[in-house]
Length: 485
Image 1 (spheres, rainbow, N blue to C red):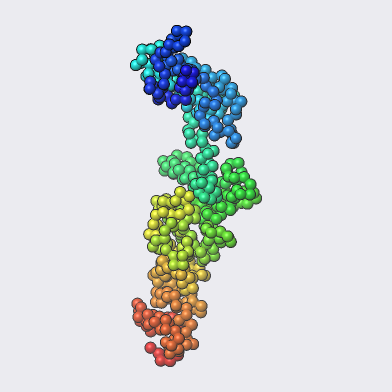
Image 2 (cartoon, rainbow, N blue to C red; image 1 turned 180 degrees about the vertical axis):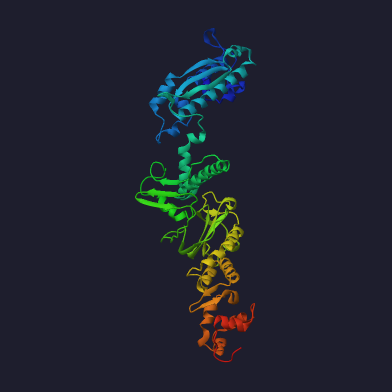
């Protein structure tokens, strides 16, 4: 019979209200004529067992907070359990306990929930069994209102309410920082930056609201990475440096941003892109160098023209399209567009993969719109690299970008550089074979027809495409030996 009674300790509260699940008789006559009401005894023992709080019966949240920063102190836990008590309250029984750790408070409150369920089950089964009527005199409910933080120096040792997310922050942090979610621990630093950026934006919105109503404001947004205890990353040589990771991924910061680790230091000024050459061995990250021409910034994004490389950014962080569409489709299988760094923000921020490394939406129209608006700034700046060779080089990877630059040059009648002179883009346009055609003055037409048939077709196209042949020939500086056309 003892085995049948103690089996109730392991039953969930819902089963205690089911007589068939109890496995006990209402009453049984045993040796010596003693009558034992098995169900009554079993339910009393089950209730006594759950009221006798023992650390090993408490929630696993306690185990999850051992051996971590700010762990549960086992000696303090024992003290709390030894000093707790059950006292009558308006609804039934109330647990009184002073807790010195958030996890202990949460575990005891979860235990009270179980006690409340057991009391409810006991009352439910007793109502339909005459032999269990005495159990109806027990409290019907349990309360955890007096399970509270301990007081030290006149103040609670922690604040309430305590959320499950906060209690399990170590496990969640390990998930966020670890390879199970990202496949690359360094990408957790990207997540930290994004969270900090979102927080600064929310605060800036509040400040802007107050400023618009004449309220005094003194807050200035700033993001700082100081790697150590504050930045929960794996110790040792395997820990990624926040400075190196952010240099690789963060192209344009919205607020002043500083990263510091092990003697390394880097600072980003708001909305200022600084060129970066991708290092040997890197398979991703910003790769855009040479003279830079920033275009006027708009609310939905920003464009910075560059001599070499290029990149797509979202909220200033390096990304790649999951699938290339439209203007972002490259001809040489490159993952990045060429000729410009384009940053999408605010309302044009697209959906990203869970690790924030790839863009799921087709953003080619947004990128094209930003580039079209930014192209005049490039033409007016007239950097040294803005010539036929550069445009044709961009076209090898990103023909859409080259088309936008050429269209802007034509509209502005810009005089593009060749090896020897400048030509009017409004007259000549930009054709990839132009530099080779310009070097053809030493070749007669017969030679071109015999040995360079493609040049002949190009000359015909040049003569027919959008203007008068003689005007184009003079503008391009063509000098043929033989009969003039």
